[in-house]
Image (cartoon, rainbow, N blue to C red; front, side, top):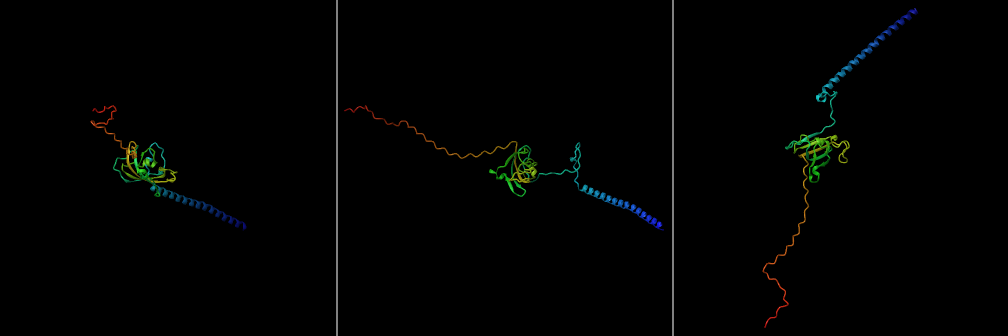
Length: 231
């Protein structure tokens, strides 16, 4: 009786163990499959969304014979402008000497320089594209006509860089310029002649003594040998 009961209990335990072993892999497999399905769907949705919002690729970014790279080029900085007044003169040319009036501000509205504030209010002259001015000025006049006025929004990379020009231009300062292209020429314009100082008027010359008219008797000294009168 006792032996029969022990065998029955052993059989029940073995059956329970077999059921547990069979159920556990099934449950684990089901959970893994569900997680894999959800992950794939999320990735597909994200890829579809990215494709819809991505800008159209420019073929010029991957020309022939150049190793192809993936991705969209991103700008580091840009020079922006607004044409205030379109000039009526000839189109501005490169490698010319430009005569320019200008006023410059920081982005907080502080004016830091103006050609109108210089002695005489004279414009400045520089060779366009000759690296004599900030990079933003070496390209900022493209497409202008003589007599035109333009507002330039110059990022600090095309102005005075990370160091600036203390104390006037702070480090990494973006700048705003109003420029007027007065004229262009093949050579620097001749400077205006300096005004001559006023001179003291010359003293009038002493008039010469007028000559004695002819026929006028001249006085004579008395003769010491004169003959006494005769009786």
